[in-house]
Length: 120
Image (cartoon, rainbow, N blue to C red):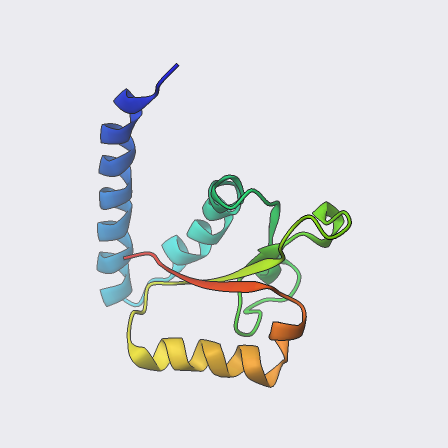
């Protein structure tokens, strides 16, 4: 069963969400960004065929990455370990800062792939 009819409402919700993040960002309100991390756990988990956890639930403002493959999901060598930085900041400085944290904390030893997901 094709779910093409869902594309339009999903696209509409994502556009509304992006605008809300952008507007609240201008007001220095980050609550939507924080909620987005939890909302994206299952969405990105499905898209990347993995089980993700929100690292900020373990440690507030986890450095460099927000979401990562749940270690309990890994069995053998079949799955890649991935990590995401969720942000509404698309400036080069934010990307550089994220890459510096990955390097400084040697996250590249623990994860196979890194993604920066921009909410806007």
